[in-house]
Image (cartoon, one colour):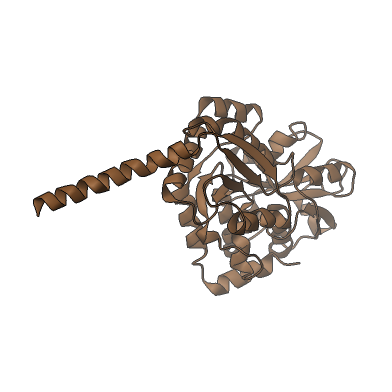
Length: 338
């Protein structure tokens, strides 16, 4: 019996040792495709490209990593591709909007993916989102939206730019008109410069700083409100009011469900079905990259903030969200509708 147990133990140990080695050797000479659910030039695109420059050196075999933009449906197109069509061999992963992770919870059957079944690599950042208007807009502060209608651009339901504008319209009672169809924040900002729009909501504060440094805390724009579970000290010091000034009572409970996604608002996902050993390699490389001094220097140069969450944390948050009571989710869903 002792001989059999020893043999079994040796076999198990050998299996554990061989599996990671096989996964590591797999990437030599390979190309990894990083799919981004937004257009080029936006915040999600910037995060993906700086990650792609540094992550390969943390993967045994040093594979090539290419970024592929796949905008559409608030990054729903990229999420569906990753879930249904992408290779499940560890050569493809994606960065999507956090709102599209929530969308199937609120609108079952709308998309062909189950967010709880994605293999998460983690999230590169967590933070605050802003509503910002252009200097030429008549909307100079959030309170102006109680008197005047403001046109705010969005990518579509499931994107933060659409959902947050709609949330403020419904839960704060302001006069926001959401104009959908913009491929990403970069296109929305250009429309603001052309005076087609008053502003943008759900604009990640780090993306805003990276894309338009000449606008951040300058007369070129107005940061009219910040949205996060807790106010960000830097934005508060700059005089940016917090969401809870305008969204109170039962409406606050609804908004808290929406804001929870900011805990993983730079999420990276892989298809369900990727082997555990290859996911272990990717997850380790992902978190190592986010601590890499060269990566952090590059991110700082691009004015990108890095407050990472690991795969286990993100997965647990998503599953907790999907366990929310149905009556509360119905109210959340209503808050995101025109």
